[in-house]
Length: 228
Ligand code: CTP
Ligand code: MG
Image (cartoon, rainbow, N blue to C red; front, side, top):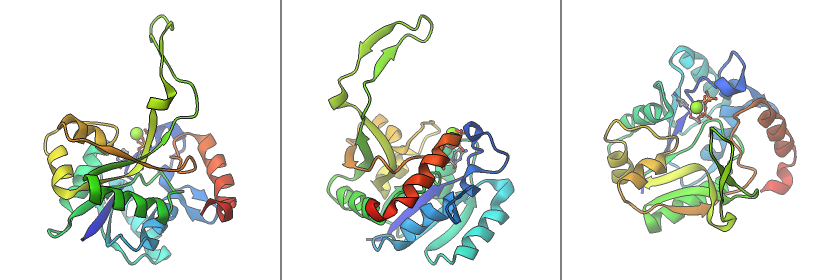
């Protein structure tokens, strides 16, 4: 099996409200993107990495990953206007003989080699897997105009999806074959009618989205001894 990961890291990070790309921000001693890459570099089931970066910061990104000394990065390519477009660019950069494709947000620095390994093993059984966690809060559906609650969801049925998301190559290529948009990869696979299964993630595998997430990530990183 030749297993590669595409890491979309080309977003502008609008909700982060800083001028530099959020994946360049430091947590502990390293930028967010270096933490994310490090987990894949250390996972023995990963053979190659395609890093998708912001076009205007590609040289800076290449410099950062060179300094960190990663061995598995095969290509660094420019992203597109949306996450979906960025992943599409990554798919085009895969070697011909890749069989299994993971997609992992560059903005999720706390993923671990163990989570990655579990997700790849689950994909060998079902072909399309998303790492996810059961939600902790009670969730309600609210009318956006009147703010009246229409429904309280059954918490035992709702999962929050994370990344990595893992697919047999032919499945993800078909899913991305059109020009549709989605906020995660599995949604495009679901639209094909192909079953997607969840694999248990970890509540600590957060995405850096808003400024307070950096504070939380710092604290989680410091407690890493108990994380693994
Ligand atoms: N991403 C990407 N290309 C884009 C948009 C997003 O590669 N055009 C990547 C981000 O860099 C991130 C991941 O997709 O690693 C998840 O996206 P998100 O957290 O939404 O990041 P941003 O789009 O950068 O942030 P925002 O939505 O706040 O602008
Ligand atoms: Mg976004």
